[in-house]
Image (cartoon, rainbow over all chains, first blue to last red; front, side, top):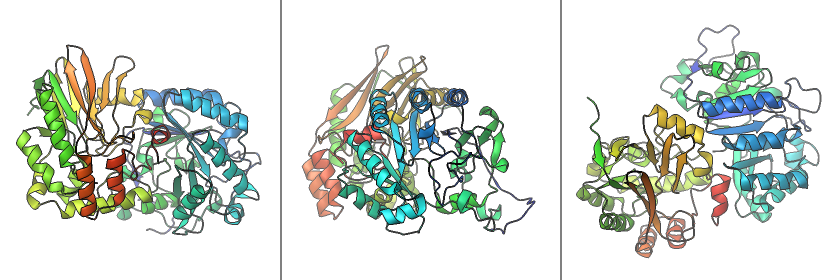
Length: 288
Length: 267
């Protein structure tokens, strides 16, 4: 890897292959939590990245549909803080399978019931990803805030009871190799028969930023198929523009257009330290 | 040189043999009895099952056309893994065991034959231009599940690849759809090497007929699954593979199922 540099001339790029995955940064960086590793530094304060209004979200979904999108993801911040999440979700599920990434701490029984009803009648699959960073309250709450483990676990159980089969998503904060097995054991212990677990690496961006970290160079990517990077098939729509991926949404250097999805379907610069993580780990923000 | 496109009235199509020679023989016999004028296999000849070498004579002697699957591509090239497209550690654990066994039990002659398989097949079925592939026309290991394959994507694929009917496999669960807006049809023909996670040991293939309108039938086939399950155990492969053949419920390689398809299974 090349060391960090200001004006680099050999910043590699990823090709644009197809729009398979559309991310909507629905609430921008508005969240009720303030996790220590949050990749876009979301929190309850005035968001530095504004929420997406419903009309913009619908426009992006329509554009993506015409482009042959395969999956749609709602993220934030905490997407369930968006006032129009349910009608938007209903609209999105009429176009493609849709996933919501939630911290699982703001979902009421009425909302859970509405999601279950939506999943039953929707044309395509509804997926709910609930963040839980450790199988124990102490490990999770150290990162996500006091009391969050208990609330998220309650939501996971409530979703499972309604047949929604949540995907428990953990960020490997401690790099523990047995995190996957321990989370599966937790879910099994909770009586969840169809446990679904996804592990993500910590991305050096947002609150976990490491500006001194390495960047990718052309030499690093020699012989590597760049079309396998998620930014080759992904675009993220936020309030202020379209970005190559949800991890870098909101960063000016990652913006590919000011709002038009079609204009953002071009090669993306792999300029960030987080691009190293994607390249090194093969991580995908998709469900699978 | 332009592709030579054969014309047919009725075709039988299946995928995912997964080294299940008993199921393959039963499907071929059934397809012959239904007046199919051609039979096509959409790839993944190895994986899960015992004695992968036993499927090759059946395929070659039948004279059918076989499209290359990700498994076939990996075995032929000596790749490090099956390129199944799994991202889950448990799925990959079982995929590694299955792949190592399959590679170790596939002869160099059969590997050379796998290397000759085409990536897709085109035929004309009545008035329909039919495109057959393994995962999707754009990626050999793309999972086209019913609940996560939107009409917009199918319209794009049918247009980009100049087809009226798209046939694929790779997921192991069958489905069919007339794409909204009159763009054409998509059929995932399912797999014959393991049941489709429905609690029965039967497997499925697809029969497509131009009458002249397109008619798609999924045909269930029973075979001696107990014999194959016993052979899996004798070969020292994971008992989970045998359990799936006996019960019809997937026990492995199911973490990538979308919620809707996962909800229908036992595990």
